[in-house]
Image (tube, rainbow, N blue to C red; front, top):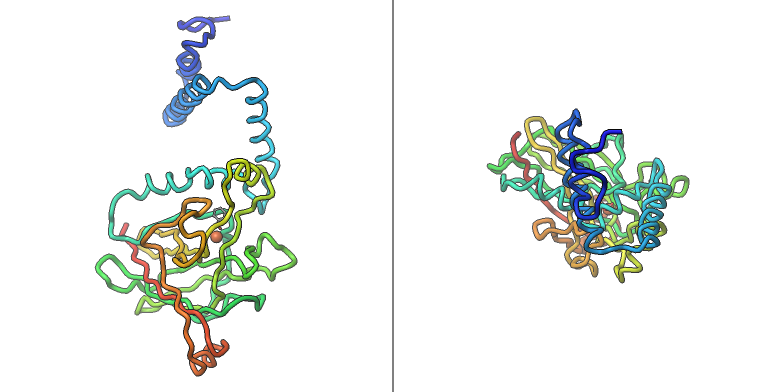
Length: 292
Ligand code: BEZ
Ligand code: FE
């Protein structure tokens, strides 16, 4: 057996020895990624000097994280989110100030294929919660309306669950919809006022948060993915600034520019037109897309 130039494994040269083994990697990017990850991991082990039990516990934590995943549950995304890594990946990929609206985490609950609905539709199918009118415009960086922008929205229900977390309890596609703007770039739809909710915390990531003295809550928000031909797609939220968790989002997704104004409207006539009660909530938020 050939011994690498660096010789047998030693504590001192550990990372160099492992990295040298990848010298013939066919994919340069993979080689680079594995070098950085290997070096940082070895550095962490040298700094922490974990016991064998601690290292085995770490392996079991990752094993349980994997076992928790299925078609509807992505525990590794949750782990990335609570470690702030999802937001960091978002930040390094959207560094230039293009004038576009800011992005934030996608989260694990987006579903492809939500129904395309006529403007103004009510996406709430379970009749729970306080009515809200959501509206705004999709604009380019010069303030011109974008026609034919596709707006994919989703949110949790009044009890803090997405439809995919409660299959058979909530109607499929509850609180999801896809809307397409007309020539004036405006959009509007009816929904229910979002509430804060815990990220799924019945798995290893939730247990870890508990041990770290952290709560699992996300402040109330609505999710958007906005796409239009010739423009960079935007994945973002709007947040309720009055939410009790607005300054401690479990996944670090809040940005100042994504705080929207949720207004309580007391107007029985308008409420009737909207098939709401005597009062309802309203939030208006414009989004700006950058050209590709
Ligand atoms: C969400 O907002 O849907 C979400 C984001 C990150 C983790 C869990 C949920
Ligand atoms: Fe969410």
